Image 1: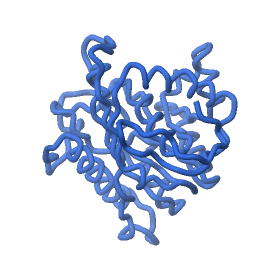
Image 2 (image 1 turned 90 degrees about the vertical axis):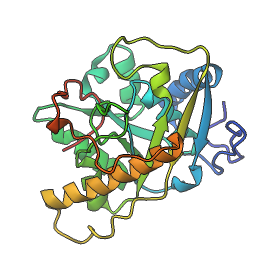
Image 3 (image 1 turned 60 degrees about the vertical axis):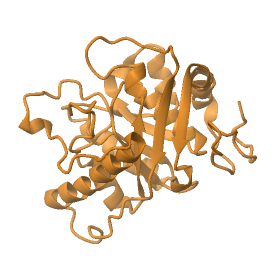
Image 4 (image 1 turned 135 degrees about the horizontal axis):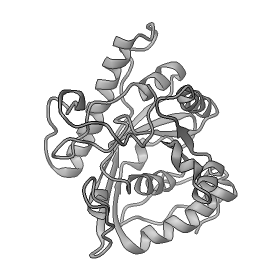
Length: 268
């Protein structure tokens, strides 16, 4: 494990050089998470991590990613760590109430999302404050694991766009693929580690939101900006999968699927 203050190059991941430069102070609890998760991931999975150069090394930012598995946070957490940033992921509030894990993820600076309550806006305020302090905030705009039958991203909620337009921070589209082979999206919940699965992640250049900046932040503006963001995520996933994403993203409101497990980071 490298020290939080070192400035030498991170080891190559599957033959690809990771980010260079110093990493922010990680603190005891986030360091504990790294000490547990990183060896597990390096031992039990293979990784194809690309696009580190598109993740800013300093300054406030939001990264948005598709959601295909409960295993995603481990994959994205490791990827952002290899980019020499400390991720602050928005996550289901109930996880923060668990006796041991809740204390760890709270102390590690992750942000709880409260569903359908007066506290729902707290996650948004915390995310904006983190970005304004120069931190790296991660949002799952879909709000839940995708319901698209082919696991393409769904339409997104507007939290990431709102944070970006309020703070002026870059939005980095990140796609991941392979986590669903470790932990299936739906159905029987079972972890499959062998044979080792390849976890693929790619970050693209910042989303161009210039057409929306400097305008009143209305529901329509946020909807349009969110569409741009989600299509960029879908495009990056198309690169990983070697396939063309659908022209129109899956909208669960137009299907019988019910969002009954919106466990991950999103703010309205």
